[in-house]
Length: 276
Ligand SMILES: *Cc1c(COP(=O)(O)O)cnc(C)c1O
Image (tube, rainbow, N blue to C red; front, side, top):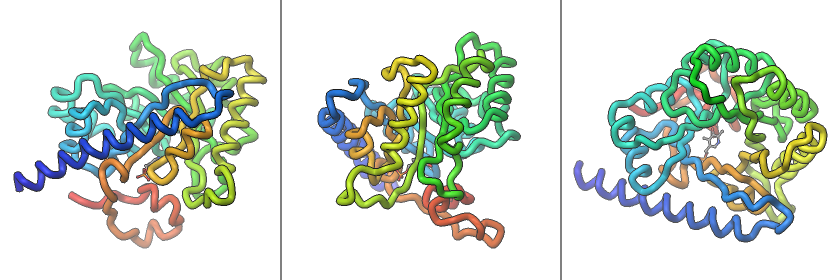
């Protein structure tokens, strides 16, 4: 058992360093016209045990992502995480439902909520964060559905400017920091750049132009294990990498009740999480 844990931890260390190197190299290949923002690597630890999070932290990783509120709340409040990872920063990257907002807002070391996709959610998160009276605003991104797949959450691109404006004007407890998208995973790069990522760039241009924001101040969260280097080359400032760092995820088979969830969501782990 010891040996298994030992080799696992070495592997995590190696993959964190390797991904970090690739992130740097991809950033160096970016067009000069893009803001020279060093991309942030968010290690997506969903379904993975706390020990692996601590291992990655020991190897210098600070930003971690989760897509279920319950799982995030448990990991972020775990006593070992709190004592071993004082500087950890959590990103929430899953679909947020109204009934989970108070729970999310209570998560220790919550850094960015990446998935605000409606005025209603923005208002409720704003109210909940205000009740916390933390003094600091909560950083939020607006999630855009760039691939027009109904199965994916996120707001339709035509609503982006209005939602960003609403957050700026009506949500004093929130700080708008960028746009997030999932996009299509299976884009064939020989056909050119991923149009979903290009659309998110266009969206940023429009937001900045219409609302008078500097481009450097609006982040782009796009890119996962299969395409983070490509996303960075196109201008991503925040990549969410899970399986390349922590290994493949194991899920239980979808139950009948989940049968209407499509395979893209399944791939993202929006179904019930398996494992211990
Ligand atoms: C799971 C997940 C990721 C990471 O996926 P990998 O392919 O394992 O890198 C990124 N973004 C979101 C929103 C996710 O749910």
